[in-house]
Image (cartoon, rainbow, N blue to C red):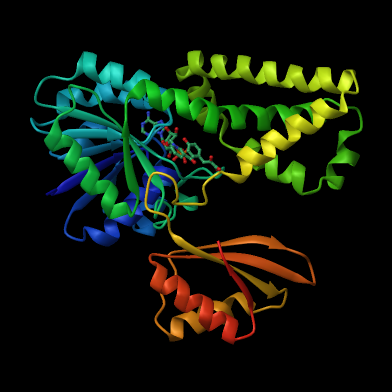
Amino acid sequence: MFKKIAIVGVGLIGGSIGLSLSNKLTDVKITGIDLDKENLRLALELGAVSETTVSLEEGVRAAELVILAAPVAQSVILLERMLPYLSAGTVITDVGSTKMEITARAAALLPGDIYFVGGHPMAGSEISGVLGADSHLFENAYYLLTINEDTDVAALSKVKYMVSLLGARTVELAPEEHDQSVAVISHLPHLVAYTLVNTLAALPGWESILPLAAGGFKDTTRIAMSNAVMWRDIFLSNREKVLQVLADFNMQLALFKEAVEKSDDKKIMGLIQEAAKVRAAVPAKSKGYFPALYEIVVTIPDRPGMIADVTGYLGELDINISDIEILRVREGHEGTIRLAFIDEFRQEAALRTLQEQGFLVRKR
Ligand SMILES: NC(=O)C1=CN([C@@H]2O[C@H](COP(=O)(O)OP(=O)(O)OC[C@H]3O[C@@H](n4cnc5c(N)ncnc54)[C@H](O)[C@@H]3O)[C@@H](O)[C@H]2O)C=CC1
Ligand SMILES: O=C(O)C(=O)Cc1ccc(O)cc1
């Protein structure tokens, strides 16, 4: 389908796409374009791209698919700048965390023979740059594609093909629905994480408090280490929706504050229990829109090599694990891991095998 794919911005996401596509499309030229020469050198060395250039003009020329993977404000500018160099029939997609702004710009700028389909992989991390890239990053992840009545069907299926190569699962939705959803599920949590850390840092003597941080602080603030340029761009690009969910958040915070002020024990219990109920319903990875993965939870002693033992027993029987997650570890005691399989047959076989080996196992 493609002879040349151009990736503009070969950082964490562009690099991860490049690594995954390079593994699968061995006879396709994958050109990495970036302002940062060192990043390009590393991308080539890691095998994320097959050639590099700092020139947008040179890089996108003759590409049938262009993937914009720079921070969102840059991607909007790059979309416009590259148009004169594209051939008829080129499909442009992006990976940006906001979709209304770029889809509106594409609709306004693109000639009839160049196509745009917005994309957003719902996987990533707080790490930036190609050194953090991972060819497996998108496996089993949702990959949101934005569509409207003008979306070209052939262009959409090319982008879906690219996403299928990454091992991700597409969900199609309108740009506004996308921005509304990610405002609450992704943008607000990042904003809150930055604010939690800043709340601590504004206290005198915070340096001596910080080492006391238990799981709660760590769990809720990992994403406060995320890239500043990327997140500045996201908040500004999705300004209206972010402000809406911030208003909702302030209202919820005020409810809690009032309940504490009034020492209203029932209200406090209610707020906590309601949150816990909803949080417990957060789908495990790869559940939700798609057929459920078949999962088991295994309790294992906290000893070196135990996870290798578990995966080894299943490997011997050729039971492929689709997903693995460490849920909890109690230092020196035991831990629990979640294993997922593609069907009930494998789930049953894994359950039986591990029980026979003496592990405490339950279905999930
Ligand atoms: N980091 C994450 O977890 C996720 C990020 N995204 C989106 O992916 C995009 C890229 O994010 P990351 O890969 O994390 O960032 P990154 O900082 O790792 O990579 C961005 C790359 O773009 C390059 N770049 C910046 N301006 C450029 C320009 N004008 N021309 C060419 N290259 C340019 C940078 O040099 C850098 O190598 C962003 O739009 C972000 O919203 C989407 C999903 C997850
Ligand atoms: O690190 C994390 O947990 C993330 O939330 C990664 C992430 C960042 C931005 C996105 O648009 C999508 C995913």
